[in-house]
Length: 203
Image (cartoon, rainbow, N blue to C red; front, side, top):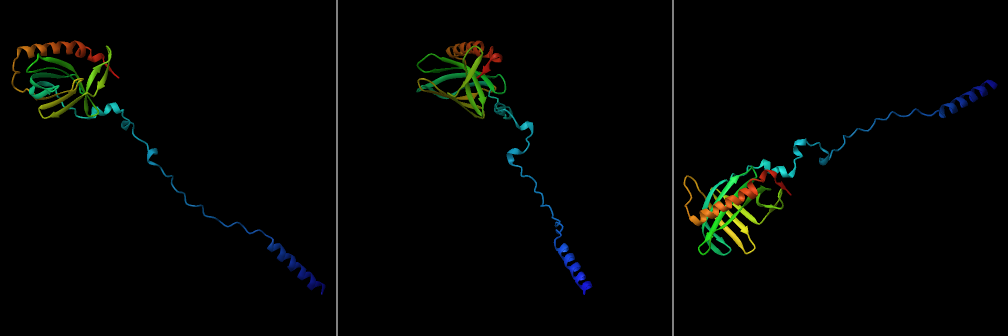
């Protein structure tokens, strides 16, 4: 009898000890790793695409408008233009110096000169602010069509609109008054614009 009691007690304590053991942790599978999402603005960009906005015109094939032009038709502040000649010369890829003379049937010729500046796919009138600084004025509109130019200039009195034909393989019709006015315009253009062009700073 004592032997049976001892055996039962031994089995009881063995069972209790077994039930109190902590089960080993279950093996877990790590969650799958997801590659980070790269947003568009985080993508690396080649330095060649970081171009200054002012350099865009260098990528555009600017038409060479240099040459000698004569009047096709025009009006100057509501008066019909009867005679006109214009010279345009290329200073660089975006700047074209010009001088011209126009005359209506009732007045002496008037001379004009300056620089057409090509920027942002548009021609502007380069205006001198000081001896070495210039700015751009949008008081002109220059339209190119084959060998013809349409020049519109906004003035304090109205508009000057002239359609010019490029002179090719022929000389200008000589007119004493117009020739003298064109000569004066050339001298003024050369002194004020052309000779100082290399020193200009655009603001």
